[in-house]
Structures are given as C-alpha cells and as structure tokens.
Length: 566
Image (cartoon, rainbow, N blue to C red; front, side):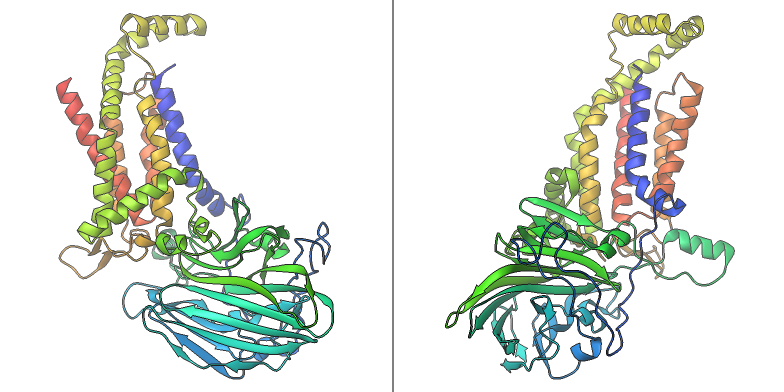
C-alpha cells in the first residue's frame, strides 16, 4: 500500500464532502431548491390551503394526530383591527388583539447586513401573518378569524429582567378559550397557558401554530454571480439564499433530531409526528419554533405559499362542564445562541446541530468564543484556535513528515522495481513490501496521523459554518490603507477572493514540498488538488478560509523545519 494512494483518497473524500452540495446544485444534478421570497398575501375571500387533516396512518382523533393547515384566514382578516405591542431590549413584537396572532417580530440585536443602516432582522412580518403565527386551531379551524376576542392588558414596555402577560379570551363554537401569553425581557421565549372550557361534554383537538417566511436574513450575491456579471455583463445579479445556509423545517421527536430543506418535499408536508417535543423553521443562525411539554403531542410542518408553517398540538381533549383544561406551550423566535437555547424548555438546544461530529464541533466553538473574550476579534480567535489545534497535533504531524521523508528516499528504488516488474503486479507488490520491511518504513506512516485529524477538520467545518458568533463578525474590515470593505463578515465569502487565492497558493507550495508520487498520473492529479480546493473555497464563508489558510501556513513551516532537520 502506497501512502500517496491513501493521501489521495483522503483528499478526494474531503473534496467530495465539501463540494458535493455546491457542485450538484450548480450543475443541476439535483433539483434546485425553491428560493422562498416574502409571502404574497392572498386576497380577501380566497380559499385556505387544501390539506387534509392528520395522515393516512394517523386518523383524526387518534393519539398523536394533529389538526392541519385548513381554515386559514385571508391576510386582510389577520392584520386589521387593534394591535398591541411588546417592547423589550431584545425584540419588539406586535400582536393582533383578535386571537393574539403575531404581525411582526423584530430582533433588535441583529441586522440583515453590515452597518447600523442595515434593516433589523424580522422573524415575522405582516405578509407571513397570513398563516397566523401564534394562532390557535380548534378542531382544525382558525380561531382568529371570526370570534370576538377581548384583551386584558395593553402595550408592554419591559426593562431587562422584567416580564409581562397578555390575556386573550373568546368563545369559539361553544368552547371558552383563554390565552395567557407571557413575555420576558431576558430571553426570546414566549410561554403560553391555554385554558379550554365547555358548558357541555365534548372532545376537541387543539394545535398551536407558527408561520415564518424564509429566513433569508443573509441573502447575498454569490462570488460566482458577481464574476459572471463582471465578465459577461447583463442584469445586476439578485441576492440569493446561500446553499450553505438554507431555510428548513426541523424537529425533535423523542431523542431524534431531524430536518428537511427540500422545497418539493416540504410542499407535500412532513408526516404527522407523534411524541414531538418541538418543531420549527430555521437556518444556520435563526430559529422560530413552537413546542409542547406533552408526550402525547403531535407535530406537522409544510411549506405553504412561500411560508414555512409548523404546528404542534393534541387530539382527543375531553372537556367536562365546570372544569378547565390547561395546555402549556412555548414559542422561540430568535438567534441560535447556544447559551440561550440551552436555557430554553423542551430541549430546544438540539436545534444547534453540527451533524455527526457535534461532539467535536461544540467544544471547538466554545474555544472560539473563549479566545474572542481576550482578543475581541473573531478572526484573531480563529487564528489562535487553529494554532492551538496544530500544536496539539504537532507530534502526529512530525511522524507524518518523517515518514514522508523516508518514503522519498525509497522513491528511486521503487521506480526501479516498478519498471522491472511492470508486467507482473503480484511480483511488484511483493518486492515493494519487502523494500518497506528491509528499511523499516511503514507505507501508512505518513497518512495515519492525517486520518486522525480528519474528524477534527469536519467538526470544525460544521462549527464555523453554524456559529452565529461569526455572522457579521469583522476580521479586517477594510483593505489596508483604504476604506474598501474586505473581511467585514466572517460568515460571508471574501468579496475580493484574496484569502482563497492565497490559500490555493499555499496548498500548491505544500504539494511541491511533498515527495512526488512514483506514478506520473497520480502526481498530476495531486497537483490539481490546490485548484479544486481553491474553486470550492471561493464561495465559502471567510472564517473557514482563514482557518484553512492559517493551517496551511503553519504546516508549510513545520514541513520546512522537518526537511531542514533531515
């Protein structure tokens, strides 16, 4: 076994891991995701989305079934009438007095772009209210369209540490509803206590809803679109949702976290999920979710008219005269900050998912935040974290470089063996293995240390890609000696392609410093790797490129030092 073969296989795996989604999307090998825009409000009198309740496998009224998306009101019925606002240091919420549905939810600490002039992030806006976020469905019908609601309380202005409650009451088809929505100035959670009562015995189904427009808070013109426009001209390219940061529906069912981002599948709706803790709409940085602390709860989600709609509820609720039934739920609308999510009920912290290598990604992100506490610059924090990781793996890298140098010394003899036995592969392999044994060289010695570091790289890749700490975090805000923006957002690609091109150059230098393969074809393929990686990294977030660039520079220094010693 030749260590160059193993190194080539590892490099190819990394390329596939990093580039498959991007390449398949650009080449059209997989259906392009529908890029949801802002919802178009239906006209008055328009019919609601025609979706059957429950599912073929879960009849309505059975345990785990939930009401569906039927009975939605036209937008004109949702956004008119008296409004009540809740203002906190973290957000501003505007609710309709009829039913308590949200018309707007604005995050004060996050903007859609860089600079104080950029608009604030809107988790909910008026068009999205056409599907009534924070609405209540009773037996599959909207409760916010028709009944006369009364509101106890008015506008809330909450200082840090304060809380407030708004109470909405109505009679819907003989069922008395009382909604108590509690707001806190310290977090992004809205808790609800829903009381149901009836003057006659009956059984009802109830669901809590949330409708969110595409979380396209980070829509940008891609590097490739900009280059195409610069070279070919034509219309100015429109900002688009990044393929690395899609809006998707996610949920937690028992201990299993799952998500779906394909628009075609979401248009059909997710299956009715029994035993769901929560379901929400999210991208890498923001989350809107609704949850219930009830093992009998069921949840469902669907992409309806460019709005991601999720609900969670319970069926078969028995109402008896003179008794009230209490249902508890919670809504989260805010950034995916690990500390806040960890303090949110119903295990909402699982929404911050780093994939298979979460066990590695989470501590690395915490390390990144730790370094930022001292440097006050996330770009510098990325560099320090990279240096620490290289220091930890320094002994393994040394063994790798030592093995590579040993293999380099054997290259002339291996070439002779391959030339001598070019028509007898078995004999050639026996002679090569005997050569390794004679000189006590392990052909895998140069690659096994690299294999050990692969999980760390994948974990760091996911961590940096999903860390909201890097969103709009500047490293070098402008090109030196100019006011031209440069690395002003580590979650966006380098607008001038400087860092990915330098990174490609460092990879090329590494290849030239490494022993060349005895196989000319393989050697040529290995020299193409820097070009492939550079193309992939052109549209990567700058934070990832900075990590890879610094890692390459340190590796070059270590490899040069090892060669000098040899």
